[in-house]
Length: 333
Image (tube, rainbow, N blue to C red):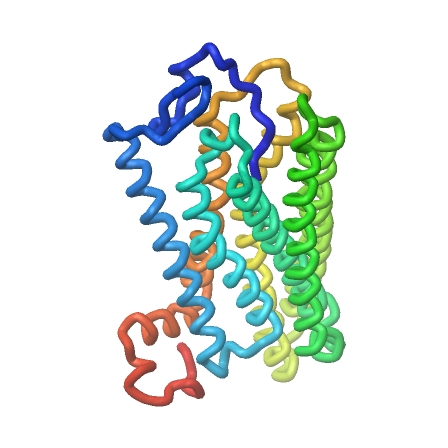
């Protein structure tokens, strides 16, 4: 997802990526990488490996353990698959075809990189939207939750999220190819890439999710006050369920919060960049890009921190215990 960046071509030093050098006003990968460049790529490779391994743990846990076969976890599974693909596809593309190298030469691979980036980030946020809807029914309408959020509805949610994301990614490539005939930046390109795209892919879904979680928070507070005023055994049982649902909501709200912290700087930058007369240094743009992509690495750590059954599942997978027998129906504590 590359923002349009204005770079002064006479400035050969300030904005050059540590792994690139100038050759006829074009960024090319340097044949003598600096220490900073080597350390940067080691860091990015580690980031990619951690992202892949962490999300594989989430995916295997949900698929293998029967206890984790719930509608909410199926949505988490879809989110983990999107995050896994970021580690497998977007990270290597972003390392091989850095933003710096795409500033002057927008080849097919640069467009593929941007398309994958946009598709998977859109898929992540649409999955988060679906999760917020799931949490709304679980906390605010618990009596109708199982009828409203059933496996069929969850499958439809997941298919819609991935389908819309794929269409947006394909549209980005087609629009990029059509805009090659523009000698200057096309107005349509600016509107789509810097204004309409972020609104539809980020700002609007985020506003919807924040409104949903605010509603959930208010209902959860009301439920907590109601539970405190009752003492019957049946109410205690309902209170335990309600407490569990609120904890799940708190965890998934944390996932949303981390997503916002990682992606907001990037989207604010690409939204207001066309209206600024000052160019943004390439390292700043790249930092925002990698901060956004690092979100895919963080979600498994959030699940492990909040959920003891995810921690138990991770331990069994890492230790290889699941290969020593059939533990699919075992209780995770």
